[in-house]
Length: 165
Image (tube, rainbow, N blue to C red; front, side, top):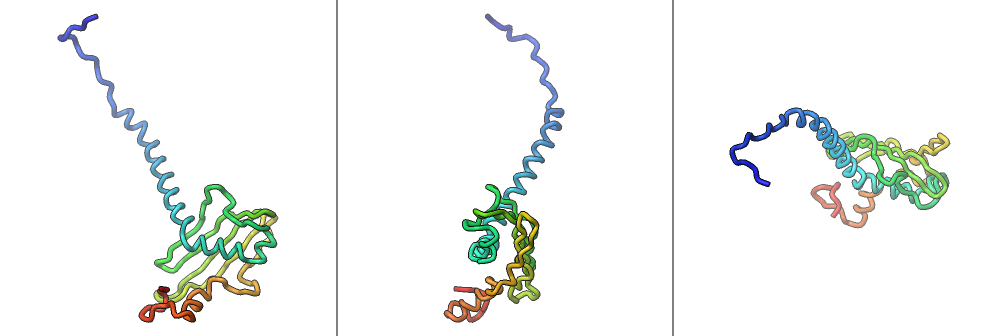
């Protein structure tokens, strides 16, 4: 089989229509990927890890959820604002234990630029709608004494008391 070298070439279809059809798909994938990246950053932050640890060690939370408290979903979604630079943290996420599931909410603000964060709300809402205020426990705010313990051990830098060595 042979082809003639002087034959007419086939028309190339216009690619502008294909480009216009795939642009929304590309933008949707880009948007979902961006949201997933930012959520992963929130989920792996020290704030989320600290609140989850404090929830695990809370007798009230363990009574409501049981042992082995962790994220409710395989891929947890952290809702809310986590803006340490401007002193605003207001997050919530699903948690589960052996005895049940719930929604943990944590809200903390820093009123001045060099001030400490002050926890305003730390609560757990169980599946049956019962809201447990975890800040009202006997042990008070589990996040408050972190810097105070470091000061007692001499681990705080003298020029900036908020930086722990």
